[in-house]
Image (cartoon, rainbow, N blue to C red):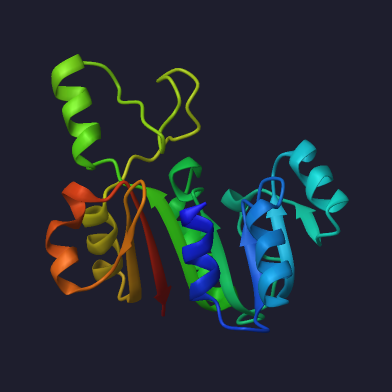
Length: 196
């Protein structure tokens, strides 16, 4: 997966990581296998926790919307929230907690301003479906719909530093200042490295 590979490249060797909303541990396992990371995963779904534990990963069951009180300040090099922000009830709390427990945080999410999403809604008059958004309106886990511009504004208002950004389409990852100017329209998914 392009998203996973991009995240793996962002994290330095031998880092201590916290994978939030880790699911069954696919990204977490990739990080452990390829870069020898140590860390912990947090997942709310019991079935996914069991699957991750069966892969030999250190995972605990927890609800991100209740915070990360079990972890002390700056106890991780990176906190990773991959494709989970949009399904949290309290994204501001989740981001604040990530920034508290880790030196750097990596946040990725589907961009709801992607041109295909806009066209789907405009021409079909229905909630969009795509590779990044495969659900129907009635069964989607996405409860916070956000765009690249929304995230930039969120960070600016809270003095959160965006250290790096990667903009993904189906087959490519792009970064840079020029890309940022058109990113809200052309990026299907985005990855941000943030810090306080």
